[in-house]
Image: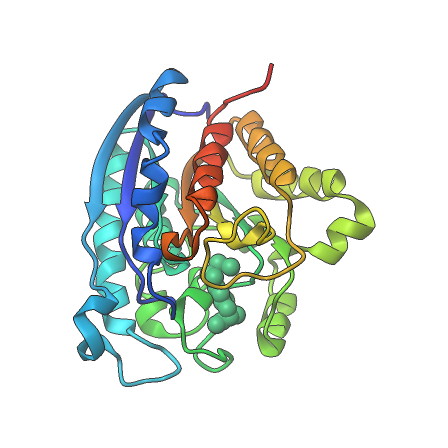
Length: 304
Ligand SMILES: NC(=[NH2+])NCCC[C@H](N)C(=O)O
Ligand SMILES: [Mn+2]
Ligand SMILES: [Mn+2]
């Protein structure tokens, strides 16, 4: 499948999957870097679908689930079902959804929306500092943005797993890339799964290029297309300070820009989330600017 010529941008204004305020503003900061204009200049037909209105922390404690190991579960579920519908409508029109976050739990809504169209024929590239593979049993924080990949692969709280219901993605075609911060039991769950993980240690020992080659192989072998879920905290906080759960020792700007170019060159990318941009923590919109540039590279912007 060739990269689509139609793109649909959605802002997902959700912060309740995280614990710091501000990530609900991420999509505004990315749009402010003239994303839509620049994508049009690359030759795409671009429609900005506006925002998915979300239940947010502004509504206060009334949204709390009462379960400290699964915070805001019902409200997050409702937000996801909204996103699911929008994504579903976009892919039915053969356009590529580009969802701007927003906390990373939104990947559950995106993938739920892709399920019908790409069922069983979809890889998943998850670029992150974290595994996002916690369940209510393993989470140290109760924050749902630490759980979406577990839910997408069928693990954890039924009210999250049911959003799909998943899987629409094959676990053997799922890759975690850039990982350097796992909770102990989360790490066990990942290692027991069929998800392929490239930690920063792997990337240092075996080389970025080799690990990326392999990762792109895994997400495209035996499937025709893949979804990219890109968490800005995969990048070192020096280059991407505007994010709620920064972890030192991350990928650098050149590496992630190159990664995106290679994603484009596969010709198999059908959908993308760009998450965890928090303008309240950013420095001069630097993180959002990098996010916009990453999206452009993933859609074919080149040096030569
Ligand atoms: N999408 C993210 N930034 N996730 C961070 C998760 C951090 C930690 N592992 C937790 O579960 O609370
Ligand atoms: Mn993360
Ligand atoms: Mn994440």
